[in-house]
Length: 441
Ligand code: EPZ
Image 1 (cartoon, rainbow, N blue to C red):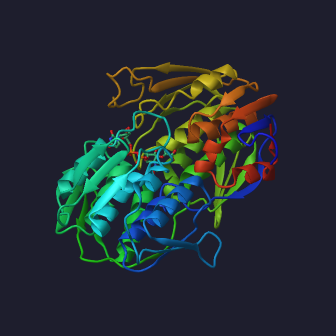
Image 2: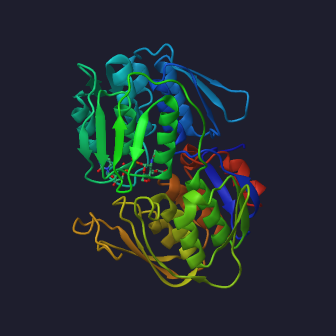
């Protein structure tokens, strides 16, 4: 690519046609890399995508003395935690604002070193994204936390102890925090109202391979019996169901057909049901799923995001672009993040008709109902989309803008595409491979 690396010209109006591959899930791989810190021996992680979150975590692990090298197979990392050591605060701080994963270093570093320094977090601007649950649970394990100007400093005056925790909301990150801390804590930890996303189950598999004892009850209670030491693991990361769904929505919105190698039906059941209700077609094959627009009008639907096994919030933004092409009124109620619909303003500039509401328009009132957040949307369609100047707001919103630009008539200028690199491997190569007409500005 030449020219301005962060601005993409998208010449829209061409259906995406072809095949791509998704690799390991962005929302599992960096966490499995953190888990390697807990082990006494090296771990081997396969199906690792080349995305920015992986590079950030690799950098942080290396700062703490973990040797990370690529394995013999493409997408394989070997992580050796034999010489874990304290890192320089200034070096850690260089990663401030780059990702949300550093918060998950707390438990493993407290176990290995007795202290941890966590820089300011990054991640998508889709709501307040507080970390109060994380610190509440760490305190329950016995950690002390001090806020310093450069970040958070944590200490474990003695071995962390298992505890009984009930989460106020089934937070993915806090559930992972508990898992990564409880496995080496003394005694039993009981976590109720836990999140049970497929990526969390995969992290449990990783930890069990390392020697952890973890059970998951049907009522979303997780019980962890702490052990004295953990070994390494060998694991192939589950595929990225969020990236797969993004490409599926791109196929639908552009009236194309995309075969997503590596996509797995099991983790996408809810998405696939919704895709079918909207009028999208898919075929599950041995090595992936083919998604296409079967012709004819798409159908409006009512949709509510939720924790797993509900409709994942990260699927919402790409699907909304496809809903602008459906006949009638679609209703979208975002219940996980209070501010994940702001991206629709740019879609309206392109010709979409999307109205936001503060009320809960879904069947179930959510935590945001009485709190003045624009967290429900009514999408009326179909509307023809016109090219526009677009500034990417967050990861999934950014990919949604790419989809909208690809579906629109004319040439859009999309600014801030670097943000998409955080979670979409090689998308700049994948797009032309699917026939998209894109070029650097
Ligand atoms: C993970 O974020 C994912 N990120 C998100 O994906 C995903 O949208 C989210 O889970 C929900 O599935 C990663 O895995 C790196 P949460 P996480 O804790 O763990 C509130 C993407 O685009 N909350 O489940 O940060 C929070 O504000 C990203 O791939 C607190 O109030 O999400 C939110 O409303 C975006 N206090 C809700 O819980 C806390 O201490 C769910 O957040 C923690 C969370």
